[in-house]
Image 1: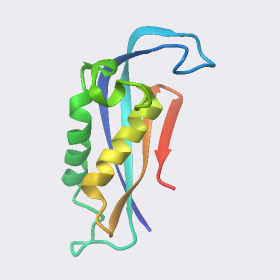
Image 2: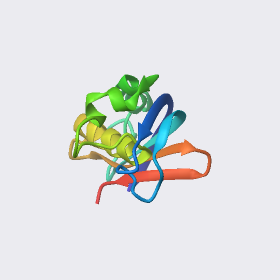
Image 3: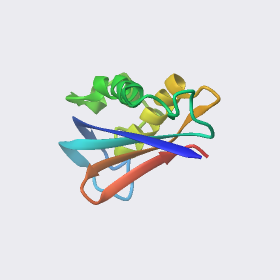
Image 4: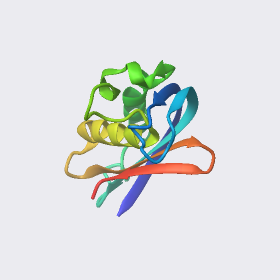
Length: 129
């Protein structure tokens, strides 16, 4: 199995009520520099001996992240409404993983994991099972 990763950092704010995270008190509006790492894998390399061209993975990751960059996540459709994706590191990881999979999964290459770090030392992952 071959693995490849790309990393980007976005800046975004969010807030959540105690209902979103029952074990935590409500959190007022605050922001993070979210570090997002997407991991893809392939059983076989392409004709050029790569999992994917590096610039392609980076570009596709940015296409997914750019609409979130310098935004208030709670205001975005993807994170609003009941039962939707929560505006948290875990929610970002799932959203990025699912959207990136739509762009990249092709039978040879597939998205396997997305990691999101909201602050140093706290890393949340979404992984395809």
